[in-house]
Image 1 (cartoon, protein in one colour):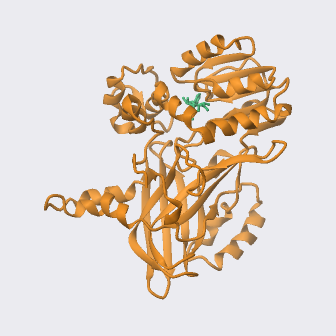
Image 2 (cartoon, rainbow, N blue to C red):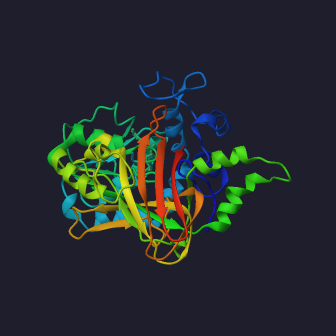
Image 3 (spheres, rainbow, N blue to C red):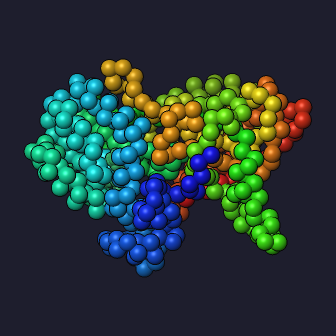
Length: 415
Ligand SMILES: C[S@@+](CC[C@H](N)C(=O)[O-])C[C@H]1O[C@@H](n2cnc3c(N)ncnc32)[C@H](O)[C@@H]1O
């Protein structure tokens, strides 16, 4: 496994950016911001935003992490990500030709530039970090000032010069798909500005789960704390277990099938209930009423609502060989279904790696599983109440196999 970092906001590979963006935790970001001379605009905290230090909110630190070029360098150099967007835009000119486009969270302006080249009538590029100033310069240097207008500010606060847009494009996905909670911003823009026949790109995202053998690394990262130069530091082990690890998983570590885990918000309550009863047969003592609002499916970004990003979903992982399971691994896929031909990319361990890597959740137990046996349970995902950009995950898992019988609930915090 390539083990370069733990969980956090997007990392930049190396140097100052690694020290700032990738390791940024909102709690300790004060010093970090100071170190790199970031400017922090003052202002009152919005509801739900944590106030840190004197006058800074967790949101300030989030946006500051995008002010440094390092994080953008990493995203741009992620060719799976950036080429996918480029191919979607340049190979589907019909979606952009003479259209008004809104780029939500434009960063360096790369997606806006692709759209302008594809013939968009006008592109509004909204970016709230200091990178907006660079984006303005980049647009000018490349001769697109007539077509692209960069607006510096938060999507939720700016005035758009037009009442409606035809296309909303955004790269909003965080680790574990939902970390950073930028999806809410895209949904806000969709509800405020998208024309009735407009499109959101990408329009589908799905979260997936599998199980891996990971003895060596679990020993190194978790069991390490049991005996540190002869001292018991296992209190830290408890914390380490609670932090999902963002890392690259080798596909040879996969022990079970991979399962789609996602919420579809557009079933009626009645339909959900029918589906729930069906699912309930293979659940392990979970409250069926939870499923009235949550059903496994793909997330439809053009239709879903903000609350749909919090959910409880059941899973059932079937072993493809005799092995031990040390962790569950989550990853996401994204698709652009409005293209002439379906396009998209996967961040799964069997696909070319991306800067999102995969998200590893270590299990308390070492699960001994035989081919054909099932590890089942449920995963609850919710935005942290104190800091909505963080994610709380509750994992319930159980196996009643030949060599292993376990039932457990674990809590994780992604921050
Ligand atoms: C993942 S980056 C993508 C940047 C660029 N679109 C690209 O593909 O390289 C997301 C960007 O959205 C910006 N952003 C996040 N939330 C925003 C908000 N509410 N309003 C404006 N910009 C936002 C961040 O500062 C960051 O630059």
